[in-house]
Image (cartoon, rainbow, N blue to C red; front, side):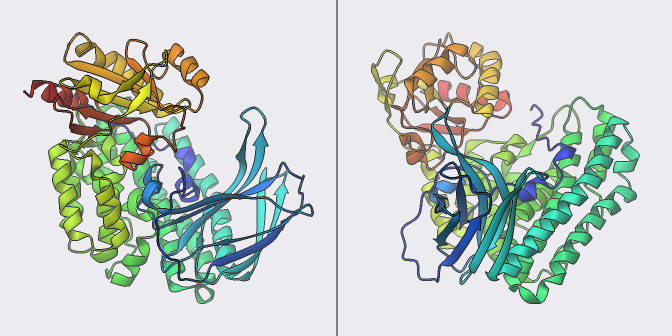
Amino acid sequence: MSSRNSIIPGALLFLILFSPIVMGKARVLPGKETYAPARFKGIIRNFRGSADSIGIELARNVIADFSGSGNLSKFVLMNVHPAKDGTFSFELPTSTEPGRLTLSMVQFNPDKKRMEPFLSDSYGYIVETGDNLFLDLKYDPSLENVVIKFSGKGSERYNCMAQIKAEMNHQNNIIGEKWVSALVNKNYDYILGKEFLDVNTHGYLEALKVLDSYRNKISRTAYDVMNADIFGATYGWLLGNYKAQMSDKRNTIEVRKKFYDHAISVNIPSLNPTHEIKKDNNYAFSDQYKYWYFINSRIIRLLHVGENISFSFPDLFDNIYNDKTIQGFLKEKLLAECLIMPNVMLYADLNQPGYDSCYQKALLFIKTPYIKNYLLANMQTKRGAVPYNFAFTDQSGKIVHLSDFAGKVVFQDTWFTGCGGCAIFHQLFESEIYPKFKDNPDFVMVSINSDKTKEMWIKSMQTDKYTSQEYINLNTNRQGSDDDPISEYYNSNLAPFLLIIDKKGKIYSRLYPTAPEDIIRDINEALSQK
């Protein structure tokens, strides 16, 4: 099995904490809102007129922090246009769970003829029922970013988060420089030693001081979530970098093993040593803690260093499922995230029957309705499920149906212009996978583009960056990557979106752009079926 590399550069220290929570289109589950909305008023001090507006992204009931999670989560995405004097107001729905709010300044892009964010205050502020705030926004040229001052009911929580962000940015500069310098000079003993761990722990404790100064001014839930954010960003970054170095084949086996040995033995303090269930349930609202720290730490323990770096997906799932120290809501979130987080697939040997078995285990364990409903709605890609029988047009305007390929094995790749992962996968597929099957009369490669204009699709197709003109090339009738029927049917707007459909017209496997051996194995298995 080939190495699956997941690299988190040292210069991106703590970036995972401050990345926007929401990516993808808003789709809101039906249901009556019974909680008081969060109310916001404010002003943009250096307002320039119709070119400026405020981008609002609110995530609630989110399973995981990645594009594609939003199709069944309660997202709110909107642009708020201020009045002529720069004032604005808006309301956001709330529930028993905290929401995560990202704010950005939005400008009209004349080239693309649409509004686009150009400056983002991307903390992921915690929104609670009853918030009633005033926001003072001003562009600071020295920072090249928007500075926001909060006042009103709930403002202590927002100001606390803003101060934590500033403190961790400061720590980012210190720790990031030390990490990069040590790597450049191959001073591995330093970054694997106690001193560097202490530097990271100092950064965590300094941010924690800020949080503790607000402890009596914010809710217990908000405190726990922010603590988990800081902890996950600090030590998740550390483990992520260890994992990147131990899986980087540019390093010698000796260096990679040194990182592996250290990663599985490093003495990271426990966030919840007494396993208090209330804390664990609150930590479940922090993606930085759940994936970047918790799941990352389990992945590292399952990896081995050598020519092959991988593990069976059920090994990871069962490692979490059988852990008696975690229970309830946190375990539900971890199991669901393990099943749907694409980064996991960079390392896991993904065999569809094993994956489907884990899926069924999770459905029996999980009790929280929206988590279970999300998993139930994403069962369209299990083995034997009925695929979407598309009817899309090729470049000549001819309508092509999936059913036209009955009796053949179909490899279906859905992509859009500008998708870096789509371009990388195409190069992998074209060089290592397609040559093995292109002359097989029972194999068909269908490349589906979701660009909104035929011109953009044709131009991209002709570059051979995302697809080959040897394939059957189709477009989703110019409906766009968020609204195309494939995203709607499979409840996923991830790209590339890869499926193998067997000779009987049923889904054989859902694939991720990982090692080519996995994909070759599944295609061969599907071809061998009668």
